[in-house]
Every structure is written in C-alpha cells, then in structure tokens.
Length: 476
Ligand code: SIN
Image 1 (cartoon, helix red, strand yellow):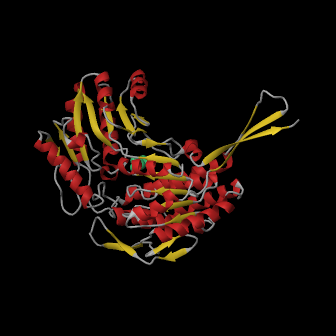
Image 2: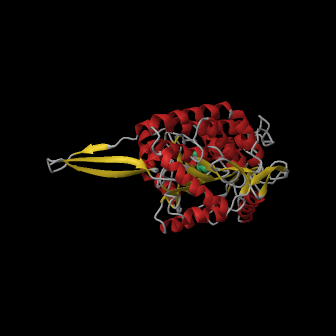
Image 3: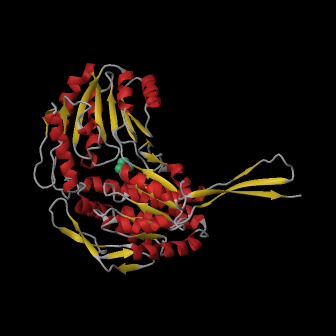
C-alpha cells in the first residue's frame, strides 16, 4: 500500500501495536490493502485516560501556539495531497483526482481553524448594578470523541478535529472500518507538525460498538461528533443523555434538486451532474431526486443523460477515472435493489442501469419515477439519478420538503426573487442556488429535521467545542 506505515498500529499517547487486526479490502481489486489495528474496550479506556491528561495541558497552551501547530499540520497535509489521494483510492475507491481535492479540502478546515484559534473572544457586558462587571468567557468543552465516515475519510476528520484542537479539546477519532489508513496518516502528520501526544488519537476498530460504548459511558468525554446514518445517530443521541454530553450529528439526507424553466440549461446539467456523481454518488449531500419544470424537462433529460453517459468509470488510481466502485458489497446491493425496484414499478433507464463487474455500477439516469419506489424514500448512496417533472413552484417546494430529512437542497434558476423565495421555503440546513457543490471549510454544514443537529465549518464549527462561562465581579 502506498505511503502506509500504519499497518497494525493505532495512535494513542504513542504508536501502539494492536493485539488484534482486521483486513481492509480494496473495493477495486478485492485484495487486502493492509491489516489495521482492531481496537476494543481496553484501548478505548486507555484513550480516555490519555485524552484527559492531554486536556489538562492542551487547554493551557497559548492559542497562538495551538494555531501555529495547526498551520504546520495544514502545510504537511497539503504536501501529502497525492499520497492521501492514493490512500483513499486504495482503501475506499475514491477516484484519485477527487481524493487529491479532498486532501486539499481537509487541509482547508485545518487552515481555517488555525486562524479561529486566535479569535475565541469573550464578552464584557453591562450589569444593572454599577458595582458589578460581567464577563462571558469561552473555554474548551473537554475531550471529544468523533466517529467518522468512510466517504470522506480525510475531510470528515479535520472538519471535527481541527475546531476541537483549535479550541483546546483533545480528540479521539474512531474512523470508519473501510478507511482507517487515511485517518492514521493524518494523525501521523499531526505529530510531525508538533501536535502533543494524546491530543489527537486514532482508534480503528472492525466493530465500532465496544470503543463507542466506553466513550459514551465515560463522563470525561464531554463532546461527541458523529457523521453517518440517522439510525446510528439516534442511538448515540440517546446514549449521550446519560452523561449529558454535547453532541453534533451529521446524518442522512435525501437532497432534492429543483431545476426551473428559466435555468441556463448547459450550466444546470453540469451542476446537477457534479452534485449527483461526486464520489460515485456516495455523499450525504448528493442529490437523490431531480425535479425539472415541464418546459425544459425533455431538453434537460436529453443533455443530462448524455453528460452522465460520458462519465468515465474505472480504476480509482487512474487519473482519468470519474466514477470508482461502490465502497462494499452492501453498497452495491442497495443500488441494484433501488434500480431493480424502480424498473419493476415502471421506471425507464435512459443510461446505465446495470452492474458492470466487481463493485462497479454504471452511472444511471431514470425517468418515470414515482413516490412509491424505494429510491424516493431511502438514500441510494450510489450513482443513480431519478429525474422527475413538476409544473409549479409551490408543488416543487412541497415535494422537496416531503421527507423526514433536511440536509441539503438545490435549485437552478435565473430569477433572483425566486431564488430567495424558494431558499427560504426549503426545510434544509444547506441550499445550493445554481451551485451543486456548496460545502466549504468556512461555511456552516449540517441539517435540520432527522438529518442532524449542530453545524460544522466556519465560526459555527468551533462553538460546538466551546462552553460559555459567566464571571460576575462584584467591585464594591
Ligand atoms: C458529505 O456529505 O458526506 C460531506 C460532503 C461535503 O463536505 O461536501
């Protein structure tokens, strides 16, 4: 495996050999990428002790020094963009071009929070009593635990770890079992940047339950951040109640894309394609339902199907590849089930619609889709784009909002008034107007309804790792 020095090791206060290991299988070749340390309850208990000790020190480190360490980490991640991109391609099948982009995106969070570390401002505020002076100061919440997904194995770690570390909170990461090596490489770079031992720990595990059980039960873990399914998010939400932990949840989505008659067709096709087929459709904010107004429906469908048919599937390590494999057999089975169910209920395939060997599925466009089909209810998490039509704005908004999810929604229009009106009406945490890829390190990312709580990114992201302490000074 390229650049992997972390076979069978995990990072706690130092690098440790694990008593057990699990194999990470390449979704492209089916071969073993490497053996990853398999952490359990014992490693988790040790990690909490280490994090607590690290907190006592890290919280007192001058924020300018914390910022400098983060800046060095940013530089090292940028210098290893290609290595990280290749690691992602190998362990979870992201095309290497996208992987390099993700490495830069992940470094962007580190750079942003290096700056924010110096801007954790408190507030002096007035009192009705002349002899009092009142202060609201911000302090780190304490050791944090992050459970991160495989689909963005680098960026979803730095999106959580960078604000935590900037705020003065050590972080323990349990990376997805499909992509532990990217996480370990990031941790290695953190140490190289001068990050003190114990401030960032990475505990891979084939089964997330034992490690997570320890973290959720220990009152010293003050904050949990999770990106993953709504089902698991609800479980963690309940478990966090026992020790009243702060919680951020970035859960599932079912993103609608509304394309209005006045849209610039070529640009709308390009944005919808980028939005849908990023990471082979395995992104929480990928559109799952494309609603096109009847006036441009046929023209859109023709151009969109052609654009999708032109996407290049292949080996994720090849720079020409646009679409890699699904991450695992379960991911492929879901895609197959959704397309088969849609076709059995009357949908038509305009391009793709078949598995193409190994874990690959051809980029697919479907028409004749109805609300009773599985793919209109569940998140497909694959390269499948259902295209539906609508008549009126009110109808489009109602259909877009008719879901328990509320992560991201998109619209394409040249009418500014409509853009604002529809953005306001959509019950989503993120709205992309003429923009299929709105996420950025300095922007708030998160959902409403059953898509989660809390925001990551920008100034909002660091607040999740800060407590407000009120100090009242009686000067009399
Ligand atoms: C996700 O939705 O899984 C993350 C996508 C992003 O940050 O753009």
